[in-house]
Image 1 (spheres, rainbow, N blue to C red):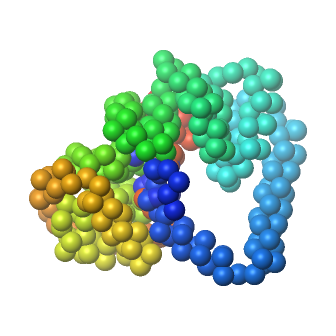
Image 2 (cartoon, rainbow, N blue to C red):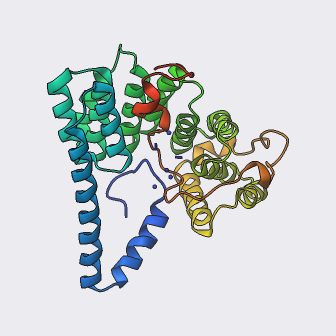
Length: 300
């Protein structure tokens, strides 16, 4: 629900991510800068992305295999060049035809470029293909973005059934459960996510959020200390917990959950660098092109 979730995020509409506190702080900082400085920053970012896109486009001229071109598109998307990647997906499909891999990359690019309806259509075309899990994953993320967390849970569960060891998908699912008010259901996928990827900041922050909403403040504090989460991430976790407990009062009966495992993991087990949006539902690496083609974990 690759998001870096970990299925973290002013409210024009409900959001799938709860890293808004960090984002608002960043925006406030930018707002204090001069207009000239702001435009300079924007121009610099645009120039950098244009240069990256140009370099990748030049590289594409010498590509002679579909797999290599797919790798180039995946690289563009990892760099956040979603609009540019759409152009290259068009070129790729014109040359080699439509495949589940190109459909998945198109769906991802459409979702990240603010075209949810077209993205949904593309994700649905993955149903019945070897990338069906990526289709359910994307549909779950779209459901979360429009604030329908119960549907996000349902769809992410379908994805998880097909890729049960995807740690970030499990983290997304646990987070979607929390946002849906299903606090007790969040415990298993969040603990699985942390043990599969103990160094992932998204999984750590989502588990800390679980401790907060289930009224285990001491456990939450000890866990965040062990995970070395930043003050900004801690604040985002606590603010989101207060919001969830205020908007899901019927779930408070589930709040007293036993501490998972045998206590808080030691700091040595959780070396990490905080992510900018640790609680967001982001596509995990398992849905990226490099992982869905052929991996020891299996192909969705």
